Length: 274
Image (cartoon, rainbow, N blue to C red):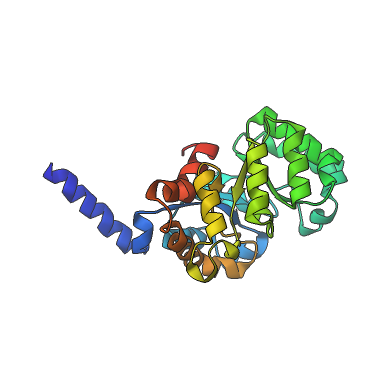
């Protein structure tokens, strides 16, 4: 099977030529928290943004944008790689009022007719807002379309969201940003329709060493975690390869099968293959 060996070498050489870091070749990342917001369009046109994903070893990316046109720009260039997610913000000002704004609901319903989106989000939700009219309607939309709700929210809000319908799947951004491992554990135990992504959770591996409580949680719920970078600010685009190298450093402190699940396997199962 000499030809198989030759093919493997060719693939490795091409990956190196494309600027893919050596460590990324055996642990690609499905980044589930990429924004391509309007301020990024000029400094990082689609080819440049995708080149950064190359350097970070990102095999696929869940992309949302304010406005949604940014997501469509990347998707048009790389439809096999970009997984579109519909962010409900037409402009940054919608963040403050969207939960009670019926115009936002109409906007999302109309955009979903494109049939390309795998999620609604990433949206911000706090306190008791899960019961507001638009978030409740989003739950029904997500369940009806078989897509994911991607929520940047506190513990109370995410629990309110997952309780509305057990057939609506929720991806919890940043693991709540500050929620301790014990709280995440409790919610994952209670709600099988909840998954967690770890963008900007530097406390998972302070100083590069995997925290014992988070390690135990990853082993217990190996099928429920994913990683992301959160490129809401342009500076995060520049830092993306380094951020993902940091993720790989602590992922390799886990059993190999668990590392693969968190790096990309769980996201592939949740969002489907290309």
